[in-house]
Amino acid sequence: MAGNRKYRPSEKQKPDAIVSGANKRLASRFYQLKTGHCLTGLYLQWTTRRPDMKCWWCQESIQTREHFPQWRCQQKTLWAAVLEENIYMSDGLQAT
Image (cartoon, rainbow, N blue to C red):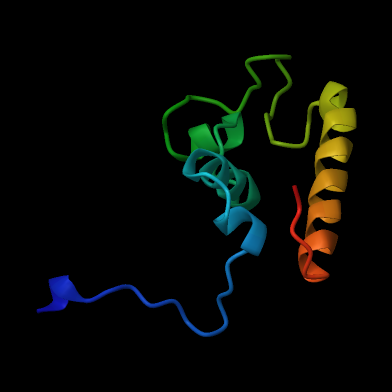
């Protein structure tokens, strides 16, 4: 009965406590970005869903998750919030 077995991650795999507590849509998008499987020209060309890696926003030759200079401020704000949330969680406090 191989079909009835549950998936058991190895002991080394520990999910991010903050992400695992988020709603499914947000957690899914986070892991897509983290693993490089988000909807960028690079990934879509690799999956053969686009003929090239060109960015459809700025026409740069390769679209990646990092290449938008106008979003760097938002990225810094996002990662600062993530860091702050991790500090709260590691101290055992409940973030609001």
